[in-house]
Each structure stands twice: as C-alpha cells, then as structure tokens.
Length: 339
Image 1 (cartoon, helix red, strand yellow):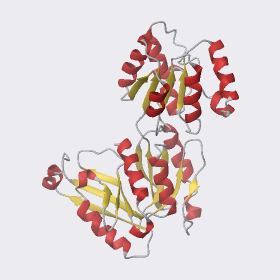
Image 2 (tube, helix red, strand yellow):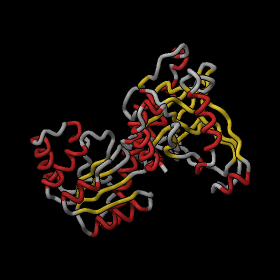
Image 3 (cartoon, helix red, strand yellow):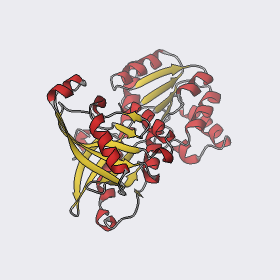
Image 4 (cartoon, one colour):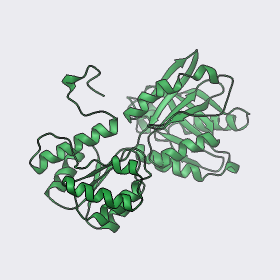
C-alpha cells in the first residue's frame, strides 16, 4: 500500500496546474471492517490518478472535486456513506462511512507529494472544516514546514508537538486531534522498508530470511551495477548492508545514498576494515556525518556467533535505528513496551 502510494504521488506530480487537479484522502473511517491508512488519489477533469477504497468512492469524490473546483476555497471535507452491498462488491468487508478531504494541488501539497514520491517518511497536518488545507508537514529530524498562512495559524502552534512523536516512530498512522478548538488531521506516510545486501554468503541468506519475518523485501547482490540498480529510489526507511569487503563497491553505494535522510547503512568487518572504509569515504568527499552514521561493525552486541544469530543482531539494530530508539532492555525502561 505505502509503496503504491509513492508511485501514485509521483504520477500526481506530473499533472500540470492547468489540469486543476485536487488531492483526495480519507481522514476518518467508521466501519468497512478496518482499512490501512495512506491511500491518496488525484482527480482532474480529464483523468483520475490513484483510488480510495478500491475506487468505491469515485462518484462521491467526483462530485466533491467539481464543487471544490468551482469554489475559491483551498479544500473541502465531507462524510461519504457506502452501503454493504456496494462495499462488498468493491472488495471491502462491509459498508461504512468515510470522512474525505479534498485539497487543491497547490505548492505546499506538491511539496508533500514530492516527499512521499521519494519514499521519505513525512507527517502531514491538515486543518479540517469548510476550508480544509495543509497547515504543515514534518520530516524525521526536521522542523515543521508551515503551509499557507491563515488566521488560525497562532492556534496551531501545537501541531509540531503532536506530530513530532508520530513521525519519529516512522509508522503509518492517522488520527484527528483538537488544538485550541480546531480539528486537525495528523497523518504519517511511511513507506515499507527494503533491503539490499551486498555479498553472497551463508550470512546473507540468514539476513534475507530474518528480514522476511519483518515483512521487508530483500535483495542480495554481488556486482556493483546490480546493487546500484536495486538501491534506486531508496528512501528513509530502507537499508543497505555491506558484507563484501570490496571497498570500491561499498564506497560507491554509500556515496549514492549519502543524501537519503534516515537510511540505515550497516557494514560487516573488523574495526581495521571499518577504519579503512572510513578513510576511503572521506577521500571520496562523503559528508562526515554520513560516515559517522554507518553501523560498522554491523549489528547489536548480542553475543552472536552463528549466521542466524548475527542476522538477528543486524535486524534488531535496524529496527532500533528505524524507530529512533536506543537499543536497551525493556527492563531498564519505563515507557510503553510496544512502540
């Protein structure tokens, strides 16, 4: 779902302003047997990109899009009802009602779509009501990028405080909060993780098997050209694990991924090997902050000896990195034990 969302976002960005596209999203649901958040669609007079709820809301969305296009408002939101028969025929478990928000694809919407298209984690705050609009978005480690100014801006000062923890957790999430009497929809778009392992071995097979349990798509490569192809489009939630000691491959791949914020890069090898790689990366002009963030030697210190145990250590370190947590025992913490 989330990877398809990145593809849909890229296609929406191709629509020109002259096509007057509007972005459609579901901000709240009742019934339907449960649905995953993160769907987006765009409606233009000539075509539709993407769909919501398997296309079952197309008629209602088209009516809302026409109303928005003829008005001077930045957005509109409304509850849409769907009966059981119509829902089941579309592939849903049962009927229900969906609160949908449609927004003009203005510069701030295009910026958000750009982040989604690049498979980056992004949190979006949308003001609900008769003049729905995006009031800001947030990337992990960043500060809130504010949307178009409005009279309600001072009342929305709590957006970053609410959205920040959601973004740092890097999980798809959608919820509505009330801030100073205003309803704000907070949503995190977080793409599914992908992994490329460089170097075929018993360990690489164990890593692929371990990450598969996490639902992570993994590929093993030996040649630079293949690895370069596999990491194309890598985003914030993805991972590169270097098992090969061929520094010419590792340096090239790390250089390509240097501009991807939040990505996990792990490297097998002794501390001497890590230092040699570090020196080559610095000579190649890779930013020191990127070099400092490489997990090498890769994996947590779990006392691992076998390939299977080492794979667990690597997967555990990746999970801690992705969720922004320090890998310590739950016994030593006092917060929630499930995220």
